[in-house]
Length: 516
Image 1: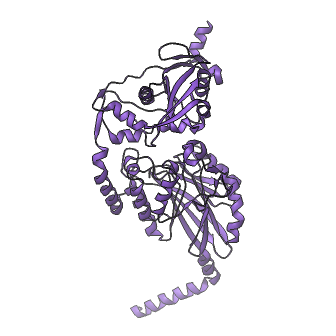
Image 2: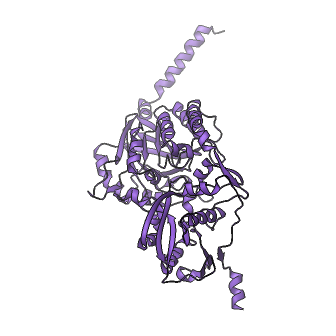
Image 3: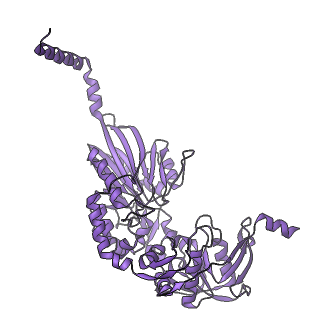
């Protein structure tokens, strides 16, 4: 029998021989490989509380904390549109969201289009409370023609001895999706051109990995893996990028465009993006890039963020839950039809200023209204963007231009309206698609007659591409919030709103019947 001491000695000898037989170059090569983990969130839109459409900020935080426990050097980036969209965030000027973002250790955020909803001065005040920089290299000051100095163009972070350059990019769509008054001093340069201009500067500063932190949109067909959108254009135009963090379109996106990872984590904290990069510090080369998506829903909520949420709700719930009135029927919204909600909202807009016609964009209606008690918080969720009534005088011909642009618009959605009955042929375009237009009282819309039109202030000064409103006469912002109009219409009442068929679409059978 071999005694235990001898057995132990033999085991140590075998290990030593095995170690010595491994070339030192292998160990050196392994030591040269560094793993960089990058987490990303986007389009939080003020979401704190768990709802049917979101697992909530506490569960999102739990995912981030778990990943940081695995690798404390993990980076965390936000893709913009972080504050605007919920009652609690809007009422408290984004403060609870800032507290959460600081808590989870965001390293930098892109500037989203909805960051401008509160105005530049208010946004600057929000930024002062953030423990991280906001990045936007392509926002140009119109007066100087140079990059605006309100935001940094990029940030350089050194992680595990590797320099990571992060270029911030706003979506050029900000020019048309944001109240023009709030961005009148800015233009938005092409993201790809902006990156190309900055690459030599970043390389000169010794950057090893380059990330585009953007509010640029993208899409993914998970049945085929096909990627599309502006994020793809950016990745193809700038193959030097290792990662493009996408946002704005609220999509789940996770794939490769050549050697560039493209990732977007849906919206409202449903998902967290993760991109893992292995980098060889000796050869100065990226060995691999692996994008992935983490589902937030299965997680247990983070207790620290739950405290933030509970304190916020304690302060805000009495206001949010104040019952204004009741609805007999639910009012759903739609981007492709003139919806019951769109009809109710525009009918109230028209009545409020005694206008002939009312218009609003479907993108401004953000939630459905159920039957039953309607609270102040529910109305806020429908219209979170503080839009006001804007009146303008348009001719019948100009109104037709508005309708040609807005009815069945594949990009902006179908225009919501009141005061008109329209027969529409979706197989035709331009004026030909508008088969018949009458006012609500049945009289014809006269091309050279002037009508009083009410819309929201965003559209009234050209938002969403509705430039016709700027050509009207006596354009005026009433500064009356549309939310207040809706609340007043419900105050203490039980409303039985029944939508009508104010937009009639001609189908193939209709055309065949007419031809016969």
